Length: 498
Image 1 (cartoon, rainbow, N blue to C red):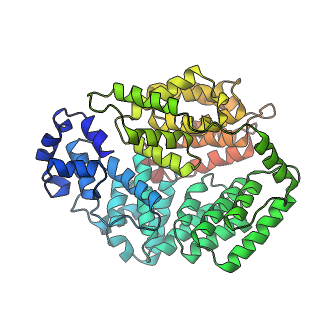
Image 2 (cartoon, rainbow, N blue to C red):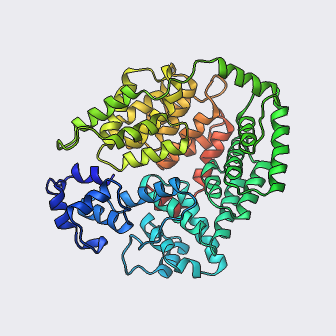
Image 3 (tube, rainbow, N blue to C red):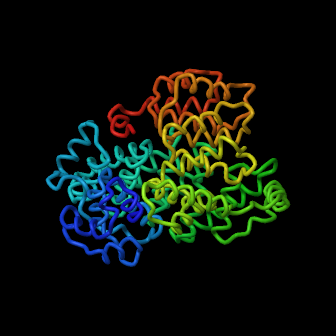
């Protein structure tokens, strides 16, 4: 990430290692560096500090926290048991944490950089208990509706508070409140926060989400989080036994098909050391059908190779003949079985000069090839286009949302990918995309409309959300999700606008 941003950056001089080293002294790093030191950092032979990454941002004229936010997120995903090292906040050195706390509680808009300053310093932990609760609630409410760097900054700020003993109870309680809200359409993020701590209150919140779910989707997500906590050793023996018994009951009772919650409960059983085979005829039938289906083809290495070569050939300077790290990240982004691994790879590529070129090439593939020919990888390709491509390629995803010949599962995946795609959509598009979900003729899954509503919410398309919430011909859960967006406070929406 550091090397390709330097050698393919806007400044020709800094692409030369000796010139970059000469300019390195000063700024955030508060140290000098020779060319050998630059090489050790860029090849991973020596640990890179936050201050060094921030100095790269300064010298290369990159947006503040573009690289450091991704580095923090990647560290946390790779080493969940090791806290991200303490550092100086990215904001002004004179920023007063107490003043920022007052600003947050006043209802004024707050940037991701200001949350970074507030949570990196000691002032937030010195607040009274009720103020700590309100600050955490606001941060969480912003995190779940933010996008891009603004999301990463808030996500890391929340993770930072989660691992501070004085703040942990407030974070856990705020996540629990969101999970228990039946109108809240965004359940995965607060559950993911709870997965990251061994605090017993977090385990209790996950157990409550399993035993008293507010929706089928929340139920499935809760079983997934329970599986994560079982593998991490966060559940005591009594809780594990109770969850095993409940999961066996749910799986055994599945007669006419294995829905998301049933499949997730079976996944929990496997994580808890129980083989669910034989417990459910429906689940076993699905497994047998899957076993006789053609195996997923695995990574298409020739496709990855073509994407890498095209990206390198269009860089502004002829510096690299190959980039093994880009090969690895592209393979993970498109083919890794883990959703988290795919997301991390997308974020790393997004923080490099390869971003727009790879996004355009993937969009070009979709223009001329039917994605349903490789359904196993359609979703990862669409999410990659959404994360990487420039606004000019947004219509590729839009077409999949409105074209009636597109398979329903692919339309649903496109709806979710649209949320993070650069650019905006016209009122005509939102109307056409909504028409595909109208009852009773629609065969699209309910998740597709929720994805469309989520995309509109991220873009703050409040007029469209209002029309969805009031339209009785649309599925109820999509209308409920739109109404939830309309209830979000103005200052929270303003703080997180992309």
